[in-house]
Length: 238
Image (cartoon, rainbow, N blue to C red; front, top):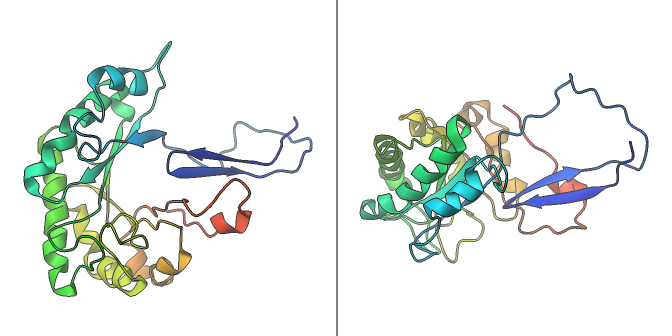
């Protein structure tokens, strides 16, 4: 079998396949990595309420001829509780067609406690936690429970939404991260825009803080097809 080095971009994720052209033996009985799924994002506020129709969901999340077979959907935690229902219809449609393999996760961009170019005050960390938990509870009651919830979207691209420093990420994660599991939801780290490892390092080097993350979330917008492999290194598997 001949393999060529390539990088494959999938949505906001990136899979890196690195191998020199050579002959390899493939043992399908030996597992090295689990990929839980592939999917996309719906943000009805950005998309004018037309993010994912039931017909589109049938194509995107259905299985069979002419279907894509996605199983993962990312939605926003909208700023106000009155907007919590914006993505319910899309989530229900995706779940209907994806079946038991469906994974739904959510990310906050802004909140009542911090919006563009602002930081959540430490005095509001409990309020912020309650806000995220209220969304998780809402979705659970709608019959589309979250698999996971993120602490924040792109803390290092914060002119448009909330900012988080490495110290703030560490302090919030260590003091409040585990509280986000209240409704059976896994915890995703703050999702760096450019996979800046300095934003993760304090948590990764403190076992007491790290146990409050279930998933390390990152975006690779600062990379391109010829970006060196070491940009993507230093991952944590739990």
